[in-house]
Each structure stands twice: as structure tokens, then as C-alpha cells.
Amino acid sequence: MFSEKANSIFQDVIKTYKVINSVDQSFQNKYDSNEDQLAHLLYRKCWIDTVQWAYEDIIRDPNIDPVAALKLKRKIDASNQDRTDTVEYIDSYFLNKYKDVQIAPNAKINSESPAWAIDRLSILALKIYHMHLETVREDASEAHRNACQQKLDVLLDQRKDLSTAIDDLLEDISKGEKYMKVYKQMKMYNDDELNPVLRGQK
Image 1 (tube, rainbow, N blue to C red):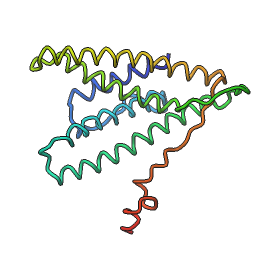
Image 2: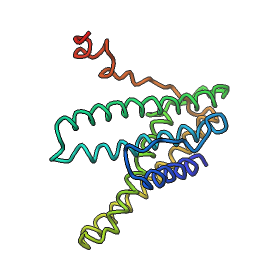
Image 3: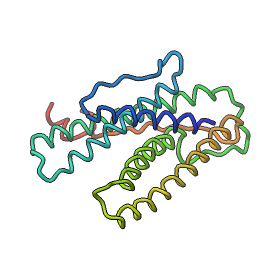
């Protein structure tokens, strides 16, 4: 099933990142885009999410230098754009894969595209990883560890349900019982012409 492959890649990304555990480490994709384009995109997607998770932790430091915080905010903005672009590349992969499927007359559209559901699955992998760490923290109270274990159980259940939903969606699309219609995000705040502040700097 697709979700098994995706979840395995996401866990590998997080494990690999944590070896050095630095936002400044270089990125090297384990998958060749010519040999396995989907795996290549999934690996890149989760790496972006993993780095951004660390960015979001760092910027919440109440003692962070304001200049450093602004610099980091720019990195987060760039990361968000990269994340959105990668999601759209994943959707383009599926659009191409299923382009010749005969769509049934009564086919329905899903509330979100496959790639945006996969986006949530990638972030869920990070939640599960970090929540697990809280369940085994030796410097935390037993009450804290128990509370985090309860949250972890919910996250694991959520991953199971989301994985099933994604697999079902892809199967329905492959049979023509549902169809894809992808809307570009059209983010405006990074566009020199659409953001009035940036436009005013020209």
C-alpha cells in the first residue's frame, strides 16, 4: 500500500536528520528522481517539514536575539514556500499517473488532494516522533510521561486512520470513482506584485 511506503520514508527522514540534528546540515536525498520520483518527492517533503519543525522550536525561544529572529522568520517563509511547491509536485505526479483513468459519470471530488493529505501524514510522523520522546523523558514527571503516552496513542490511531483514508482515496482515483482537481495555492505574501508591502519597495 502507498501509505506503508510513505510512512517508512518519513520515519527514515526523521531518523537520518536526528543523527546530526542541526538545521544547518546539508540535505542529500536518498532517492534518485529518475529511478523513483515519488520516493524522491516524499523524502524531500518530510525533510522540509523536519527542518521547519526545528525552526519553529528555535524561534519560540523568549531570549532569541531580534535580529536572529527576523532572519529565522525569513527562513520559515522560504521553507513554507518550498513545502507548498513540493506538495504541488506530488499532486502533479498523481495527476500524471492517473491521467488516462476513465472517470465514472457519478465520480466525486475529494475535499483535499492526495498530496495535501500526505502533507498531514508527514507532519504527523514528526508529532509521533517527538511525543514518543516525551513519554521516555527521564527528567519529566510520571504524570507528564503518562499524559504524553495518552496523546501518543491518539496520534498513532490518527496515523492509522489517515493512512487508510489516503490509500482508499488513491484506489478510488485509480478506479475513476473519484477524480483529482488541484488548485494551486496562489500564495500572495511572497509575490512582489501581490504583496502590497513588497510592491511598494520596487
